[in-house]
Amino acid sequence: SEWDDVGVQLADSLSGEWNIVAIDLPGHMGTMSSELDAAATALRLNEKQKGATDLGGPSIDRTANRVLKSLASTYGLSSIDAVVGYSLGGRVALAMARLSAMHSMSMDDKLVTEDTRIILLGSDPGLLPGSDGRFSSEVLRQSSMVNRERLLKDTALAETLRKLKHHANLFNSNHHSKALWSDFLSKWYGAGIWGDLRTRNPQVYKDMVARRALSLDKRGNLLADVLEGCSPARSTNFDWQSVNPGKVLMLTGELDEKYCKIGTSWKRMSPELKHIAISGTGHALLIEAPNQVARAISAFVLDVGIEQEATQRTITDESAHTRPDSVTYDKLDEDNAVVSVNFPKFSEIPSGAAKPFSLEYESFALPMNSGDRKQQGVLGIGWGLKAKASEDTRVKQRVGFILQLQSEDGSIVGIGEVSPLNGLHPESLEEVDKQLDLVSNLISSPDSQIGTVNGESILKMQGGLSQYLQSLARELDLVDFLPSVKAGLEMCLLSFAAQTVRKPLLQSLAFCSNPNGDAPVSVLPLNGLITRSSQVSRESENEVSYSSTKVKVGYQSIQEDAMAM
Picture 1 (tube, rainbow, N blue to C red):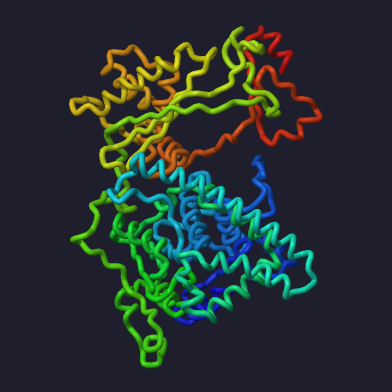
Picture 2: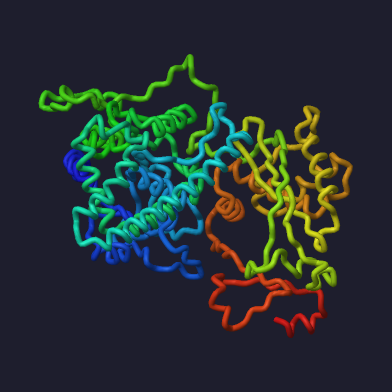
């Protein structure tokens, strides 16, 4: 595989105390087609999780979870000192760190700790703040657009791979099949991240295309599934928050402008992070500069000064004299550095407090259709007779507002939704708009007396959330907020509070309500919804892919509703 040269050197340079375990990810393995099922079974990728929906293929989280379980059960590991991942593998490594920190994970699977070293080779850590250190509305908007475009692109590319694989299966000629894949790969390796590899190093390019064409010919469909299911647009954007920057080494090729820029931005935000650019190379680090990659990894995991190690050469190291691929440490020009937020070190978890600085909101409208998508609108939503299934009560659109609560430096952002429904909420969309405007003006006012959000107090779910909302209502001379507005502000504050303690929302709620971890934590799976107009027959039950289903009742008598159930 592409890791062979680096792996041999690592095995030679690291002491006998280190054991190297190489895991083949789906679609990237060096095994033959006939061995795919065995490899997938070893990682338990073929198993459906109990009570979960089969998403039809690999995903970053599912792969990371299976790797953790495989390392714990098959290899008997209780901890990992370092994780190295190239490209997709780096994103899996970051997901392993996030999953290991979750309370819902089994203790046997918590292999990645705060002290685990993470080495990323040309990998995307997720959405970093803008150049001013903030998650501004514009940064979030652009990220959403990029994700939509990326998802469409990856889906189309996966479909192209499947079609090519189908055509390749029709040919008995290996030459014809290789020509088919070579045309596709010439476009793939023509992307900017490869640094014009075809012109710079024709032999390396030729070998890469031949090797990848053989791989696609054997398992093109699986690679298509990986490309689609593991698309960055389908993954979390904030895995970088789960790792200690001081324990992270990011390697990029100097000619790979995309990942060099990402590495520089992350380094600027977290100075303790190590970013090394390897000159004269693009994204194909493992093939173009295996010696430099191996030396950098060894120095990092052994705690040898990377800058010193990177510049040391022995007389027998001919590459130092014949190739312009020496490792250079990424230094920041302090005079030209962009001012950014100083994020706290991982070992210095914030106390969980921040003051809201602004509340922005934007309207949305989503069309609603019947379950079979044959009719526009949904029946049976609301309370009492207002929800009786009739054309007069058909809800054709879900309208409302998306809220964004932000701290002054932009590093903490809470998201919420306010969507009043006719028949369910007494307030109109116009009344909601007016009340949100009052709250927005209150929070952004320089004379505002609103208090600081104590994240831990709110996340304990013992009255802190209600008390904070009551204090906001008192500032506005309100008895209480409109029901839908209150629900949206609660979402915002919970999301905001989770950001203050630097943990995902579910993990924050579990941690703050049970800091000692001595109580079991469970997650309620996504449920299906049956409205009063829905007809579920025995023949269609197998089509419902939810482990639980919610049925709307309430407009009839208790006895009638019970009989309907």
